Figure (spheres, one colour):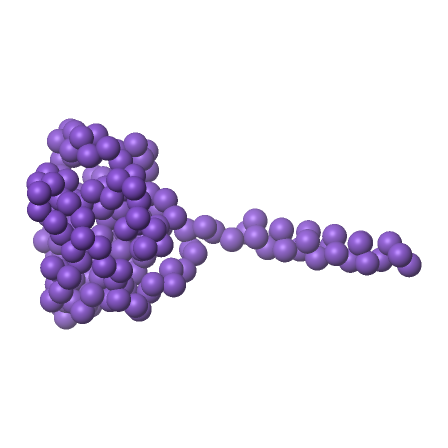
Amino acid sequence: MRYLLPLGAFIVLVIFLGIGLKLDPKEVPSPLIGKPAPTFSLPQLHEPDKLFTPEQMKGKVWLLSVWASWCVSCRQEHVYLSEFARMGVAEVIGLNYKDEPEDGRQWLSQLGNPYVLSVIDKEGSAGLDWGVYGVPETFVIDKKGIIRHKQTGPVDPEIIQTIILPLVQTLNGEAG
């Protein structure tokens, strides 16, 4: 009888562990969806004397792409993000996360720069406010400054075509 309680607790733990192992970390919902984008004022990567704040994007649908030069998955998604940026349906702002600015500039120089501009978040404080789990992450923000989607992990052609592009077109008032 005295072994039933520990055995019951063990069974409950095994069940929760089993459920947890089946969850996809990329599907963790952001508590920021439907809420105003957190504000920040950060120096631009290529013009550190100029600051950027999300308020400057009010009236536009835009993407915030969180990236770093040390991020292997960022390199993987870079070509697809560049293709999206060339479509011209929404501006893409980069948030260079926990990176050395010179490394970020060199990385963009080598791979191409899909961003209208990137900001420096060397300490990661803005990323923390945005609920960044790791890089890359991409946010879609509407004309009123409300976060409408968060993509955890790299974007790829399927994600762009089935999620991001239709959402951006809807937010821009275009036919999908």
